[in-house]
Length: 202
Image (tube, rainbow, N blue to C red):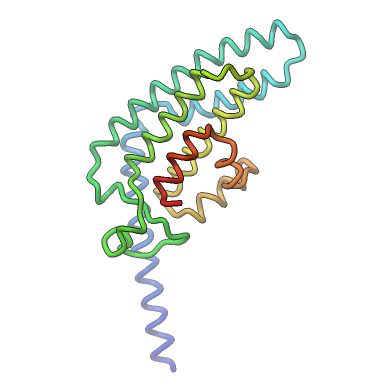
């Protein structure tokens, strides 16, 4: 019995070390590309700007804020598009993301059908963000901001998923933004949702 417990402890320690190594590698890889741009900072500034615009009572001041935010939206989309293009050069083995709810060593190698391609995911997010910004449907500034915010948060969820796991990504999204994963899926552009669900095999 003691040997069995000892073996379990050794196995758990080994799995934890593999998990930590894998996560550190993925975080470093993603940061090596994201670090070239200001995607995260622009994203935070844009969402804060939306909140200010929504709280503004004066119609003229609110209109000026929406116009200023439109420029920020285009700049963010441009940077994210270039980031996604850069990341497309990553090797497929390093771009695979496990669909399992928790970390399992070597999932990408032994269970390739239970993975999706992060390179494709970033393209899906880039296209979704651009559709929201172009606003071909003529949504109100408020509705446009709501959709684009959902697109940005779903993209952030995917980045956390890539670095850690789906479970951790969903928990962080709920803790930081009080937004459940399913609500994000329901709030993005329908084309984004369709492409995203097809990509993750749902």
